[in-house]
Length: 317
Image (cartoon, rainbow, N blue to C red; front, side, top):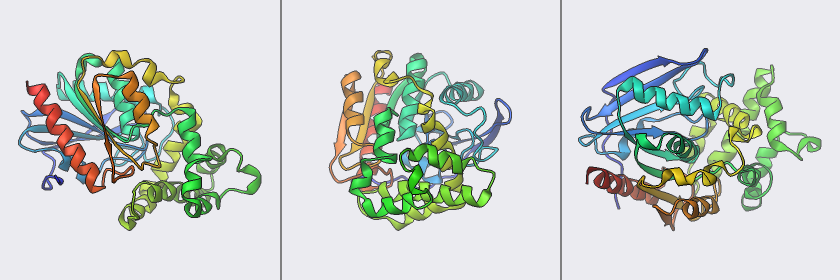
């Protein structure tokens, strides 16, 4: 079973101003002459981590990470103004031009798979290949599953903690109830709601309990950006039309792709990946038996490292 590559440091770090008030954090590592690959993080609002560099052979890849608007090291943190899917797609194209990349591979998981697909459908001529994990189509049914009814029946104990900040009278629409608190002027109310929202996701992300993952999701800096931005996107239907990704999948024809999805993914259930696979027959779906949603799970790491190498070989060929 393959593991992550050794830790590396960035070769270059940039701060790129886009539409006010946003400034993006961008970094490059690995081989400047290698195959360009853009890491598209999850959330939305999750930000990149140092481990994202470690999915790739530093001698063969030009590894590009960026934190999306309001996330991670981008500024201002958790900002919702000017933060839509179309804005993020435009940012990706701006980054490509800023770095002088002609074509690149995209590597995205969860919301990162969503954004990678929307970008690839808009700019197919710029995409060498796609490695996607934990497919999230952002359909109404997908948001309802995780934030209203579905996963709640698999993890009823964790669900009680998620419900705690919300009065019973408001629980008929939990995304709206959380949105009111996450956009409140009361900072204590905001952070309480953010932690409950983020920890719910962290607890459900792995097949086996992982206190390290939960602690990461509970950290206030991470939780406030993840919760505010996710809730902002989900109350707005991710700023996508109904079934937009699968309806536009014909644009992906000719782009090599591998889809990695955990059999027991409770955040983004497997039917997301099956629907994408049916709409994009050129991609290969790999269902990982002993895994949930998180990219930290050993079987997911193994599958992703293999997938990157396979797509890279096809690109080189």
